[in-house]
Image (cartoon, rainbow, N blue to C red; front, side, top):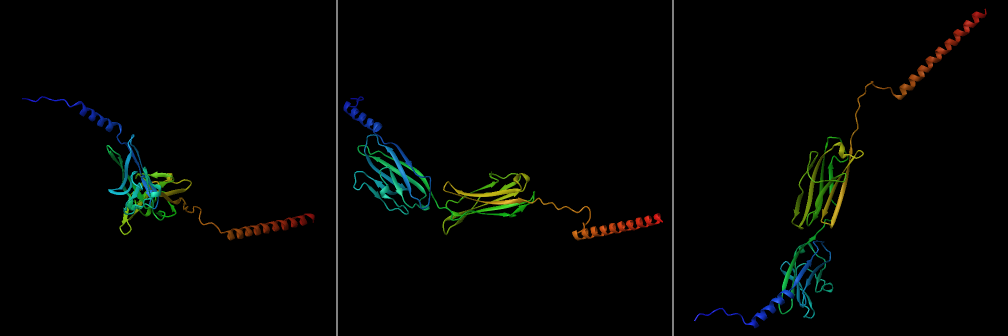
Length: 299
């Protein structure tokens, strides 16, 4: 005897509907993780994890650096919080709780992914994980260095070579160039910009930056006879330093003499005295001649 299709009993359908309603109405929703995108080595940072359980109790919050758990919060346990040993991770339990965890003295080795795992309580134990990336930067211990050749003045048409160096850091510093506050982005007819060079020091794990620029001195680069070259080194918004060099336009003209050698001041004075003496003799002679004429006339 062939068996036909049998509908499910109403009770089973009812329970199935209840389960679906629970899944839809009381599911874990809107898990949001907030991690500083970049932090300074040595700083204290706070990671936060917001969630909406929708009438369901929280079962646990777990934090991971990569795949290693370093903090857990379970409300039903006593105490509810617990930190786990992970290299370079220093949890401040006094400032950590169900929605955030605070890390003291972060180091550049802690750059990487951070995960927040939220689990709802019975009956469903829904779990959701969100991930965010944080960079911990080791900043340079000194300002950038700028060298130019020539160093102080240049003639129009001459080339100026500039080199900027930023000391070791992690990540390496970015270098930008400016001429009179105008940023140089690419090479052009009068400017040649070399790609940024990164040099690594495996002993300390830091990277230095070097950039080169060549400028052909043209009149428009000089403001009131001076051209200012600026090198600016930066690492995200954490660190920014710049150094300037001012180059003077060398426009001194060498004029050849066109009237022969000129007399010295002493020669000019002697010549004036001689001329005066000559005039005095002429004047005396005129007086003598006039006197003799008057005597002859009276006789």
